[in-house]
Length: 171
Image (cartoon, rainbow, N blue to C red):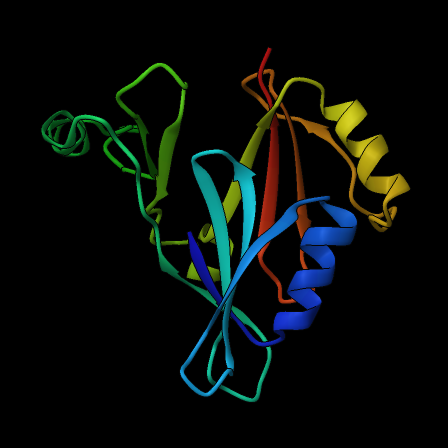
């Protein structure tokens, strides 16, 4: 995923200091100007943050890239799957081919503005332990886990650029 952000250094501090992600590499132009910071999520997944090219803060989601061993099956999955809620499509959850359990959630509920839909979600085994670790690393106390109607525990936080970061407990 690539997010374009208003303050690249605030994003770097948040991802490193609060979330604990390792900065994997930087992308620079031919003059040495910083174009992007890449953070390692796991061996196959990275988050990239680039300047949004504007003076004001904020962010927007620029790109989502999927790694798959079977591009034809991935295309078929993307075409066939969707979640229907009483005739209104709010989101589309797509399980990706392979055995990693990865899925892509596309939030398309038009009543919600893009800033509310565009986010990154981390599936975790213990939301309360994750909250404790993040709090110890500097997460403001106003962010707390909550139980949703489906019986899952979630926690939404915001980075300094306003990006929603969701944590979802899956056991």
